[in-house]
Image 1 (cartoon, rainbow, N blue to C red):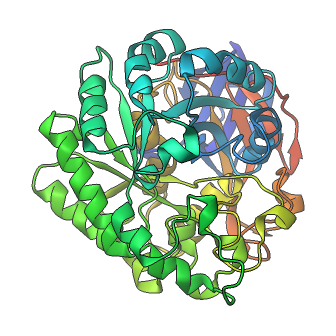
Image 2: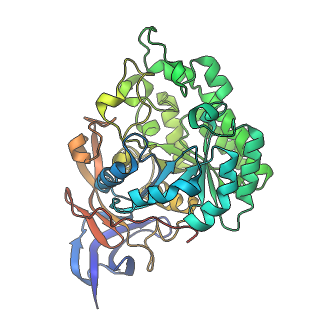
Image 3: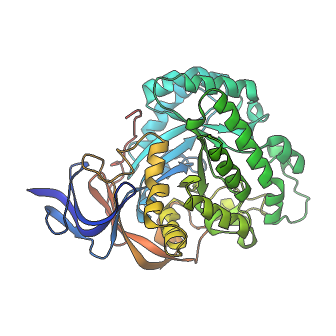
Length: 463
């Protein structure tokens, strides 16, 4: 039998079976066969000898459309993602108005432009949004949501909503999510606004900018968003979810502090089922090397925090890796000082290479663990497994062929993003994809984008 595509002679890596030499074949969108090396034939054969074949990476934490519009980001950022072996992203999206009224337009902007598959996670900002949860799940196929603790008290001014996002509102939406007939996921931005607002100007209101203040460096961000406030917020909100038997669907996004990761380990030992995510910048940067380009909330912290996070990725406490990706231009990003600069930066395309380079090649984690935290666990957390995040017959043929020994210097030209800079610019990274396959179609090959925009599609859930 001849298949549409065969990736031959590579070492397949999956958390379920470990590493083994095999051919992987795809017919149409799906994996059709997995067999001994050199035994499958195809219309197109990619020789992966000496390389590793992984399930396509999944970035669950992006913000496409936040600065440049969704139509632009869908095209340029998904194109860039292919360079880094990413075949699916989750896009956190929030608007103050009715999702029932506006989402049709956003699907229309997204669908013709994505090179790879995607799913939306919608921010809950109002009581109106709570009422819309059944519609969002049943009609839009969206089952993941986000609780932005950083918008507490400021949501009415910032978004024109009917809620200040206090715990009475949170209690109502957690109960609404728990009552759905299908699994849902709640991403949680852990921040204590009473603490962070008291430590500095409220960063979420325009009135916070003091143009007469002297230059403020990166330490100002670290001081204003202390690690203990992140930890307290995760624990308090997780406890509220647990009261409604919903902690197994509670997903703590962008854990930045070693203290928070250690707290999560303690909660796991106590029987809590919270899922933890960290981001590549917390694993590969320290505050001392950060400047205006690296403004992000929560901020990058110390070397000690970094090493604790790696430890918690290795021992299973932290289950998923994301990036908090935002595409913006350097001239727009960089302000008068660090807090005056736009929060967020582009990074999805460097997610898998950085984990391979700093995690696997530096001996911090195994390759199997790297696959878990960049693909399989994420697919499970957002209820798209085994369609995504797996190499099994019948699953989507999302595959990444990786050369663990290939070293490249990060540049905007390499990454092909709509952004004209990278927070990792000039860094040598070892471990890069040579091929990225999206649902059976080769989309990236030896440095060239060969896929088509519009091939990607929304993943309707439940699957």
